[in-house]
Amino acid sequence: MVKHILTIIAFIIVTFTVQGLSHFVINKAHFDAISFARAEPIMALGFLVMTIEGAVISGALSSWMGSNVTIKNSLIVSYAFGLFLGSYIAFTEPAKYEVVSIGSWVAVEGLASLIQFGVFGILMGIIHKKFSKTRSLIV
Image (cartoon, rainbow, N blue to C red; front, side, top):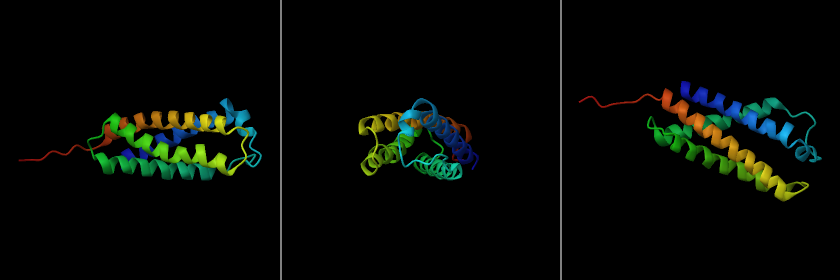
């Protein structure tokens, strides 16, 4: 259970850092150009989503690999979820909403997702390796 809680915390920290820097610092003008965005986001909903996503990704890695986790396996799981979640943000949102530039939207969201899920995948692998119980057969 400790590995899942630590993984969720790691997901929240990485996501908040990467997406926060992207939205409020590096690509601020990009996001300020969205006319339908809230002036003040509802942070509690964001933290709820990050908690759910972190739990699902951590559970998926454990279900797939058990206690035999490697950083490579962790990156595969993290990037698979990143592709799933990031593709919606990168491609569906500009299809539904009027954004200034579809190309820049895809680039900004795609790069942020790549960084977010790469860093998280490494951290998740380290956490799962350290806190997974290895089981051996007693003969």
